[in-house]
Length: 146
Image (spheres, rainbow, N blue to C red):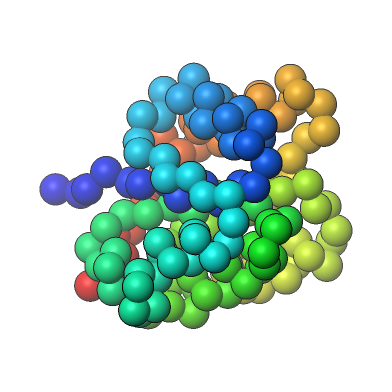
């Protein structure tokens, strides 16, 4: 039996975080959402106190990641997750305002699974998140490597 997927949301803009959670819920996704507003606390949660990532062994996680954070770049979080032996299969969805082609390419090279540029318009942003929620409701997410 598969375990429910926990969504790890790393988003420093509280307004965006509320909008993301509200519209994911509106799409019918009721999974736990664990929010973080900075990279340091997100990495501490993902990798655990010892930094090994073993803490999430056997759990199904999905990371929703903003690239522009106050203390580090989302690129560094992406790199650390994908380099970790226990977390490397964890899907990472980059959701950011950055639409630079080089940055997009870099994220895919580092292992991001989906890259979404946040629409500037509120209604377009809300709609994009609802669609993302529908996507979350149908994808299969592996458990962290045993």
